[in-house]
Length: 291
Image (cartoon, rainbow, N blue to C red; front, side):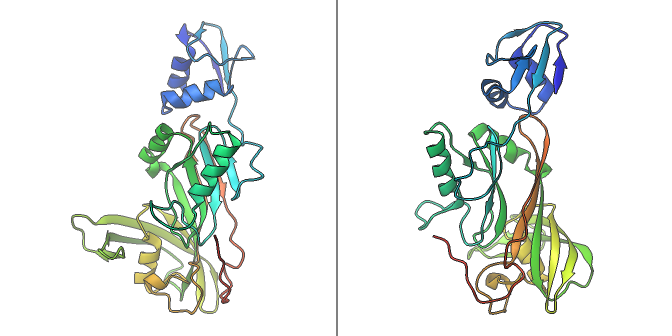
């Protein structure tokens, strides 16, 4: 992006006007990390005076090159966000007192060690323990909150292997979901405490007794896909909690394979993809284990 300056203004004020939805701390981080040039020269002073006739250039964020030793695959990283892939069988983030590790814990340790304590990450959203796929982290709390505030603008798609076959090749599931005292989610009539859940699906592949679906979330409720397809009569394979009777080891066949968002600083639309995991369509009895 190139800006031809028309009025005298501070650099950070100019960029806040141009980026629109970006936060002040996000733009300041962008300047300090040498992503801005004025008349062809990198600048790092957020409040430097910019004069009419100056040319301000924004160099797009690029993925960090030193992610080869990360404990989990990194799809993208820059100064404000990190996008990684979570395998099935590990928590996104463990609550205090929960035994074992988590995606967040291991990625945080990696980031802190790599940056010598200068960087950390913050949880934006979660996937269930048995669900695999794309997970986004923010690199400061203001960016974290900004992404959460604009979460409806993100797009999330899943692969789901379900028992049986939906009556229609494509369709939309709409229901009101409520979590009970046993942390089990179910559909209810519209009422206080219930949350509207909307899920779109399309059949990708038909197997003898299962069907692979492409699922797009319009809303992001807890266990949304698992509950709605179970109540439709097509529970997700391996999901014992919501109706799967098949003697498959507990690996829920649900994979968050696509995620898109607007970058919280640059406004650029980013898209990320993750391949179907190995063994996703195999109904053997081998169980994957994680520390």
